[in-house]
Image (tube, rainbow, N blue to C red; front, side, top):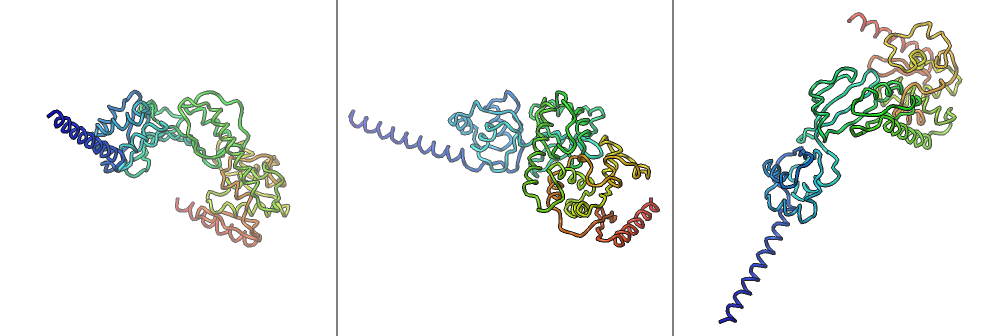
Amino acid sequence: MWRAIASNAMTLFIVFLLAVGVAVIWAKDQYSAEGPLASAICLRVESGTNMNALAERLADQGAISNLAIFRAGAEYSGKSSQLKAGSFLIQPGTSMEGIINTVTASGRSTCGTEINFRIGVLRAEVKVRELDPETSKYVEIISFDPAEEAPEAYVDYAERGDTRYRVTLAEGVTSWQVVQELRQAEFLEGSLSAMPDEGSLAPDSYEVKRGSERQALVDRMTAAQSAVLAEAWEGRAEGLPLNSPEEALILASIVEKETGLAEERPQVASVFVNRLRKGMLLQTDPTVIYGVTEGRGNLGRGIRQSELDRETPYNTYVIKGLPPTPIANPGRAAIEAALNPDTTEYIFFVADGTGGHAFAKTLREHNNNVAEWRKIEAERAKNQ
């Protein structure tokens, strides 16, 4: 009798173990299987949130199929206490395992609110935008001039712990403009030790944290520009009339200010390279303007004849060769164009009315192009 009871107990125990094994295998499969989320969501995890509370919110949003498995998976993997604050993009079908890995990894937000402080050639602008999870595109919420009082709604976004910050430099801004605008970035701290050399800052988009030091950011911009210039100089074309990386940076800044069309930069660079080779005056308006403004904002009017006639270090209608310094901070494309210009015989160019330029090899061709441009200017003036 006892032998029969023992045999039955052993059988039941084996069945139980098998059932547990099957349940564990099923749970592991469920944990790593494709999840039920139908469309992407931006999951915001606030500081102090625990894994249990997050699991309930995920279940309410239809992102996980089983609360118990999610919690057990987090506990078993040792990640239940590693939850990071931030906003995380969860793609459709992400498994429970994938969600846990996402919210316990770096803590770097991948969606949510971003404040972009953009320093442009004409003005600075603060833009608050949020990522639309379904389209993976940013939607602008607020936009304002940093010189003006920030809208009340901006403060709400700025005080969120998971808001990301970015400072963007447009190609062609001057160092004076950068310094002036960075002083107005309320999320940055500290002063700047000195005015950065003109041309030494790399136009780019820089992610920063609230409370970052202004000088540290400028140092990053300077290091980035040095790296870009060194790489481009190493790969430069042979036979250029440029004696140093510094001269290349000066030419690149002129190219940057002369055209807003990316595809034109190598052609514009070729004109100035050809003029330097021939010993011709560069005769470029942006250098004259820089001599007048010293890079402190925009001229806001046409160049006067007296300014074209007056000899200054930046008046390339009077001085030979390059001006003494860059006239703006050129981007990578302009630097590469200056060091690898197109091979052309062009020595003239003038606006063509489309946003680009008409290039010419001879003065006669150039005069014809100028005449066409004058007609376009007159027609536009008549229609205003």
